[in-house]
Image (cartoon, rainbow, N blue to C red; front, side, top):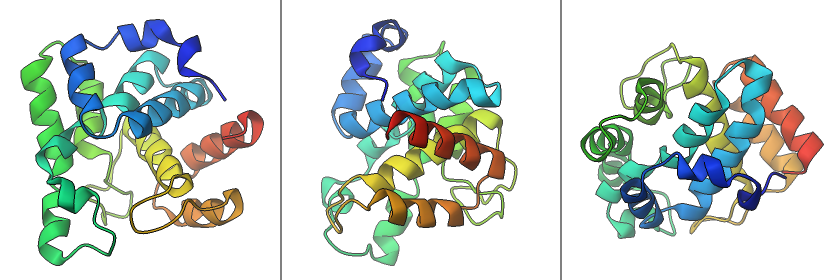
Length: 186
């Protein structure tokens, strides 16, 4: 697995103020999604630096979600789910304010990383995902499945693979993530 130590210049591409915000909510998840997206990007012809940055900042909008919702040890209520589903828009808005020079493709990926090709995602129910958005979405899903959550233990590689395949994301993106996961031991 690519380590954060081997990618210092990628972390340096993100302004300090943005780092500070990421560190307030999900720093480990952010770094893992960034590193996985960066590793997969060349297989998809996606800009690897933008993939890293988008993966790193994708959940910055969780700053607008109460800790009690983020760490709920049970399924979210309908009201809590609506609050959680606001985080992509909050994140894109926050990025625009604290980092006006943030690449447009990164802004789009932050705003859309929970969209799905079936239109069943959020916040807008969009069916079309940019290649960068699809990559960040897939890296996010993989890391979420393989990481412990307040409401469940981390899934095994086999169980995560089954759930990952069910995600309504482009097949070529899922295949590229699976390839890197297998080759690099994610």
